[in-house]
Amino acid sequence: MSQSRIPELGGIMAAEMAEQPAVLQRILDEGAPRIREIAAEIAARNPRFVLLTARGTSDNAALYAKYLIEVLLGKPAGLTSMSTTTAYGAKPDLSDVLVITVSQSGGSPDLVASTKAAREAGAITLAVTNNAGSPLAEVSEFHIDVLAGPEKALPATKTYTAELLALYLLVEGLRGGDGAAAKVLPELAAGVLARQAEVKALAERYRFAQRLVITSRGYGYPTAREAALKLMETTYIPASPFSGADLLHGPLAMVDNVSPVIAIVPDGKGGEALQPVLDRLRGRGADLVVVGQQDQVDAASGGFALPAGVPEEVQPILEILPLQQLAYEVTIARGQDPDAPRALAKVTRTH
Picture 1 (tube, helix red, strand yellow):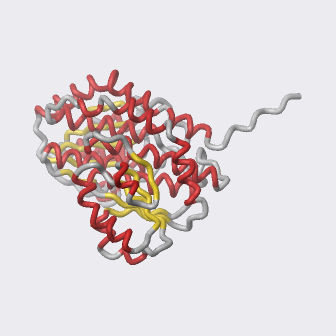
Picture 2 (spheres, one colour):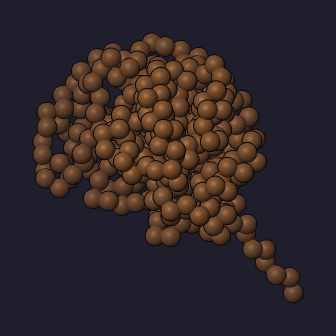
Picture 3 (cartoon, helix red, strand yellow):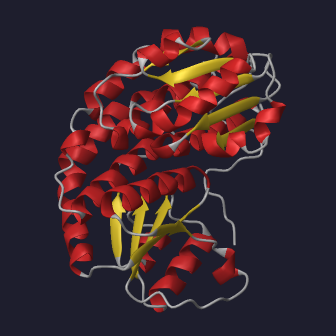
């Protein structure tokens, strides 16, 4: 009698991480035309500002969109507090406001309820999901499908980068851009993911870590938050994400000469703004690992060098890839299964 094969630990997450170049290419080939159409319709209505609604990993994608909207469009953008509507029953005037709700499943009741309330309050509502038939898509005026395909591992990987690209193309469409900066991403993403052996070697330093600090600035800050979330939900290591500016306002005191710190250093204005923080971290003797350009990696204790010459606004799509792999490799090294972290469900039904 043959024995059934025991699935490899993390096999699903590994496969879904590997799909990301193909998903990015699919969005560019199949999703971009529809995203441009939606962006043109919304731009014609000239929303006065933008509100973004999301939870978990999608909240980090929404934060990335906030940077894009404020920097590239010059419009105010904010992250909503859903409980003001769902728990307190607030009824803000949202006429001529664009409300973008980002959700992989589109099934969380609070996301659906707050989006429905926003539409009733006069907002232009747009859902960005991986499920065109979801309740969230149904209650929204517009919907963008991120085309990532079914995601079975509990940690979101391919849906996150798909959301980032879809949101970038949306903002580009809103300002009449062509999104050309994104065309190189599938090939570059494949090249980054092919260097997993480098990440596996890097993971050894965190196998017995008790805590981590992750920092960045500008477009890299959402990456820091998402990396911390991935590490916490898979490895169970407490990981604290900080804007570099916030890190200097007190939390730097907890960093000493044995503290592991990961810095995402964008190639551009965000990285320039982070330099004083990196200097302070080095001065405190922190175990500093950098995800960024080769010169930044060389000046740290170690790190992962990203491709050069990529516009800063799309770098987050590449930055997160080695950090997803890091979460995976540290989890495997600790003898845990990254496919199924304890106490988590794929659809979180908050109210």
